[in-house]
Length: 108
Ligand SMILES: [Zn+2]
Image (tube, rainbow, N blue to C red; front, side):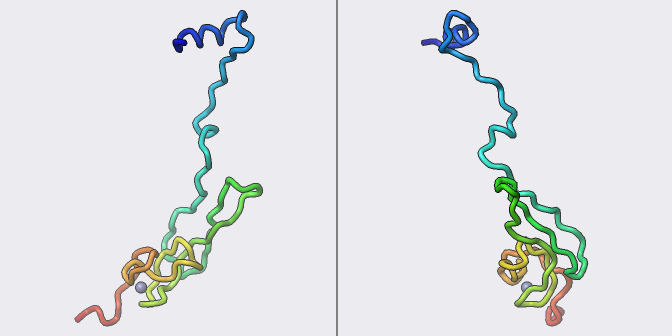
C-alpha cells in the first residue's frame, strides 16, 4: 500500500481502524533526557561542590558532584567532573581538568 493511501485512509471516516498519530515534540521523543551538569566556575579553593542530576529518575537523583579539588599526584587544584572518582588532573594522566598553577620543580 502506498503511503498516500495510508494517509488518505487515516484522515477518512470510512476507515475507522486507521488513525493519524499526533505529532510529538522532539524532547518527548527522546529516549532519555541528558544529565543536568553545572558549568565549571572560576577557582574558589574547593569551597563549592555542585550536584550533577539525572532527570530520568523519579525523583531526580544526584549521580556525582563536580568542583575544584587538589590532584593526588601533583597537589595542584583542578576542576574535577567527579570529586570522589576523579582525583588526578589531566597533566598527571587522570580524567580531571587542566591543573591550575605551576609545578615547583618545573622551572629547570
Ligand atoms: Zn596532577
